[in-house]
Image (cartoon, rainbow, N blue to C red; front, side):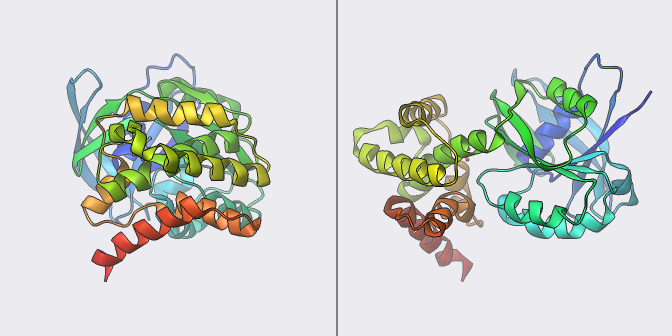
Length: 313
Ligand code: PAF
C-alpha cells in the first residue's frame, strides 16, 4: 500500500489543528496518510499534544515533533506550510534544498504575498508544484502544545504554479480536513479572505474591540471604503470580486465571529509582529503597482505599523 507522506510545517494553532485532522483521518481511501508535524526548532522532540475538539472532548497523544533539519523531510510528498506570512520566505529558503525533488508545497496563512516570490523560486525546481490554501476554521492555542478547535469553517485549496498536486494526495487531504474543497481559481478565494481580513483585523486591533463591535454604524463608512479599494485593486490584478457579495461576506464573518478577538488584535495585545504587511500592506503594494490610491488601507497600514513600533523599538 502506498503511503502519502505529508509534513505539516509550523506548530501554531492552525498547524496543530491541520496536523490533528490529517493524522486522525478515518479516510476509507486505500492509500493511507503518514503525517508528521515539523517545527522551526532544529532538534526533533517528543511531545504530548492536547487537543480539545469542537464538542469540548479532550484528546491527547504523544508524538515526535520533527525539527526542520530532519533527514525525514526528504521523504515527504507534500508539505503544508502553516507559519505566519512573514515567516514563509526564510522558512522556504531553509527547507527547499532539503525537500524531495518532486515535493509539493501548500501555503496556508492569513494575508497574501509570499506565493509570488515562492513561485519564482520554484521555477528552478521543475518537478515541484505550489498550491495555496485558506481556512476559516478557528483554533486557539492556550499552551505551546495545547489547542482548542473553536470554530467550524471552510478550508479552500487550489493550484497556483508548477506541477499539480497528485490526485490521490489531493483526495486524501480533502477527505481528512472537514469542509475542505478544491477551488479552480484559488486566487479569487484568497482575495475574498483578504477582503475580510482587511476589513476586520486592523480595525479591531486599532479600536481594541471584538469582531462583533464592527457591526455598529460608526464603522460602516470605513469598512465600505476598505472593501471598495480592495475590489478595485483585485480587478487590476485580474480578479473580479462582487461588491455586494464582499459586503455580505464581511458582515457575515463579523456576526459569526462576534465574540472573537481577531488574530491582529491578539498580536498587538501580546506585542507580537502582526501580518499587516500581507493584509492592508498587500493592497497598498498592489495599489502602488497599478497606480491606484488606497487611502483607507494605507491609513490602516500606518496605524498598525505605529502600534507595532511602540513595542518593537
Ligand atoms: O485573522 C482573524 O482573526 C480571522 O481571519 C478573522 C476571519 C478575521 C476572524 O477573526
